[in-house]
Length: 471
Image (cartoon, rainbow, N blue to C red):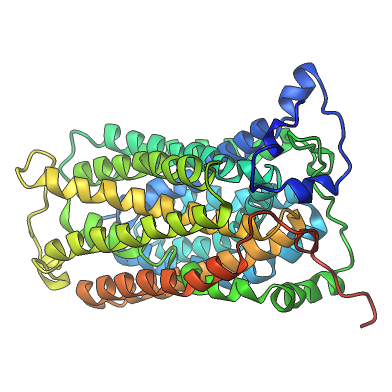
């Protein structure tokens, strides 16, 4: 395989030069073990599991008439997610990314099954909440393994492209799931989905459970420039737990990304429950959900491949441009959303017989475009976060710890937002806090971009230096 990936200016040449170069396999084995193929398989795992979860969540209230059980289950999910994700990098580095990924998929099947049970037995709300709490543990494992592989497999000049590939395939899960929900409920003007929708989601999540078995062992992966993906050493649990604090003290710039992490799932609550779930009937919610996840595919590609991987600009310059695009979009989209939010309240929408917007209503097109732009914003936000972490290191063990921090803090923010919705805080309060946290997260990240993002990753950034045993 040629070395053209690392011959571009400004991007990783010195880091690559210090590593031994290996010959990549040829033929079918070379194709199957190619980093692009493996990241695509990773995308399909998330297509089947988190993708179906996203389709379910995007319907507002999990597709239920009463969104309170969904809000409380989601709060339980993100509460356990927040706690366990802080340590999930440790688990990933001890068990290995492939096993960790597979363990993480099981919770999605249980969660979808719980919604099916609730649709059949309306007194099964406790089961849904318990399934949400279990899914939080599983999701922490899945997303940490996903982050370490997605950011560890590409060369430095490919990270935006690989994030875009993963994000496109993953969000196709939300697109397909939303299409299934929209199609199966097209003739319905009710506010809840039928059992067939949940059964379809359940089957797809079960496929996702077995897909990690088809992935190549990460320790055998060779990047396109011939460098090996750094092997995770699998030290003792004690050393791995200490590595959490080593990562913070050795690379404290990651702390400035924490507010951006916190906001990164916080905004889902208003988008899905307090806008999509509040204003629209199930047919319109299904279509809104479909265009939301479809726009994510384009948003990630535009920011990741076109901007963040552009070889005409220095890496730090690309980081600043990416930040500027997301910052502008935050204010455009939230300013637009405010013009709608000020026209309705939670009390008005909760009234029995309150009219819900349908796809044939004359005001619907403008409202669906807001969902499209929210999808673009979300994908650009998440792609930027992953790319910034990937710019800090190429070592999967260090990236696993960073991803654990990301998912932990992200989930803490989401748990707070979903709980606020579950206890019935005014829509405007949740919306205002969403806008404020999004802006603040970006402002905190700006000094990190200026001071920490380098034009190539230095050798000392490559490896997470574990504390020796006995210290």
